[in-house]
Image (cartoon, rainbow, N blue to C red):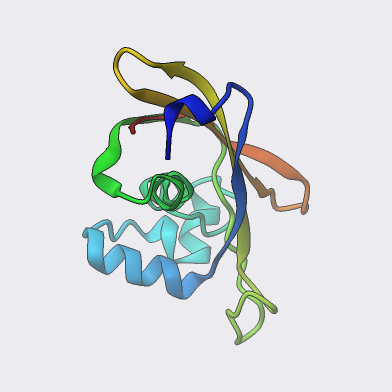
Length: 150
């Protein structure tokens, strides 16, 4: 990829990421974050959540994969930051849990927001949304920005 061929506002793509309860259980085991809000419906509702929600770091990590794929090298990402604004509810269908019958979908799109020729870097801004418990898309991450060295 050549910095001179890129321009501010240029899209780096869009991706839909299915998220199921099984994904959350696997992530909990890998990360050590066993908080029951990520797997126990009754507990999540008891603490005021709409139900089981995805781990924030799971959502953050899944979103940046768009940038990793675009850059072609995870080591090219120099900085990645975001703010969490809304949880990602992950409903479970009766006895199922496949994306067709349960779960949620996180949608990520990225655009080049800034170019720094002197440093050979690009800042990519991500728009990250997921449906709320009523099915309406909401921003779940804001100020999601990655700085990539080309």
